[in-house]
Length: 118
Image (cartoon, rainbow, N blue to C red; front, side, top):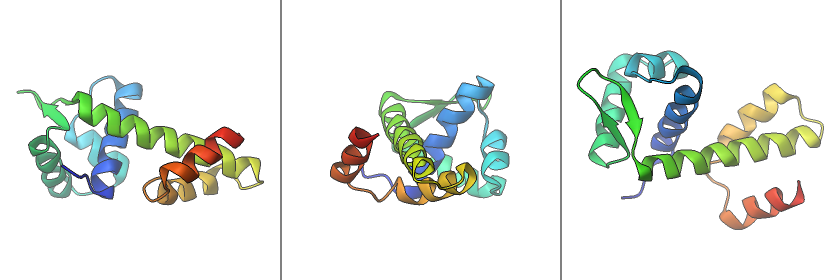
């Protein structure tokens, strides 16, 4: 199943939150992304159907192996691209904003070239 950019954002957010909070719930995602609870619930339903996440009976969300793979790929892209932009003189805040936009669309070839350059 091909995952949309928004799905990638959710998976990356779950990964980030799990690193900082340990356990992740839908409300944590909604607050982090500043999205409504119904929007998050719908997205999580799609990610669950795609077998990218699992939700336990208490509402805690974990990434499946395929979900973690996508999340880590996007997180790495974000980190590397932001670091690259900062090295060019872009402020950290703006570099992070721009990296969020670029990380989903950049080709593997271009990303690997940036990664190898820094």
